[in-house]
Image 1 (tube, rainbow, N blue to C red):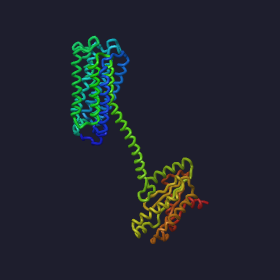
Image 2: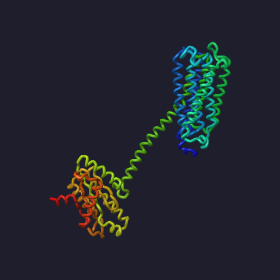
Image 3: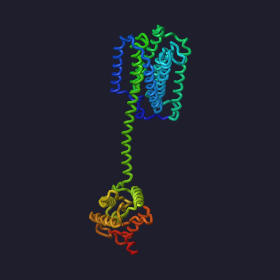
Image 4: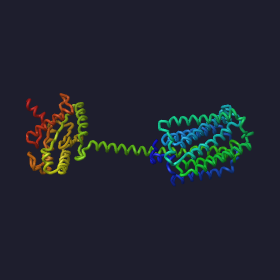
Length: 482
């Protein structure tokens, strides 16, 4: 498996090195969180009113936030194929699932004792499983993350199998949450009593202390595993908020629905939101960059198409453009029964000019002739094109035979006025052109190819008659029938 280019990996916060700007923002977030914690800590035991709607509203926001974060991280895993990202995404999915179970079992929300057969200790233990499980996922992420290309991608894992791996991660996480929920509800008698008569027990202090140590360990391991990416940096902020959450809602407070309990829930929501906000900002930047690149790509494609339809020497339309544009204009002329003409122009004795003056002079001559022919196309839809070699063409929509003949004569005069010396020309002492004119005949449903053939025949006649002149075959045939 080939490792991805460094610039492709660094497009994601999970691989982007943390710069000074990101560090300043992260430190600012931690300092603000710490200041609020210090202000709330002395009043943590202050009792507040029971608000039954708070838990479902809070848990719903938490579940949605964690689910979105998990989806975004799974998306980055799908690109980078990092085992560490897979575990972190599963960690956020774990918090979303177990927060949902926690809400269902919370007493007084959906029933007096909670759903799922919950008992008086079920909600408390689900809180402990929740706040102990996420730091374990963070520790696993920190230990697996590595700067080497081999470690960034899962060994032997192709892009086609990442979807299966993600589904396996989701299924495993769901199974873990179901098992923990089963233990906290059906097997709660085997667990220690954490809340008794609405007050926290000494066993609660022991368990919460273990959670604190586990969260601090996650913080230390994250800090130790350098260099830090932007994702690592904000995970450090998340773990700081996680510590404040546990301290306020399970250590410093006295019971549910006091200031510490409410403040801890707010910190829990902040912990779930920090990384989500960073990821959403990242995706917003990616979308903006993609939109900008799309505009640039469209402009580049238009420029490339213009170049592909332009003759490199004369800057006139090339043969490819001529074929396409003539076919389009012939179709339009037939549809609306409009007149249309084609003038084929050929430089007289150009081979002799090249032989006598050299190919560089020949190229310069063609450039001047092209500029002169361009001035003869006055209408917006008229186009001058290089048909090939020393042969040019004028496509003249909405132009009848008489108008086309005048334009052909003007083209001959414009080239003659250039006064490009041509001592080897049998037609004139200067470079000259011969023109053949053909008009579209609607009565026989003439095609673009037939129009070119008719103009070529007219040009051939002009050459036979001595060059440096114009011939209109259709006009001559009309005169013959008259």
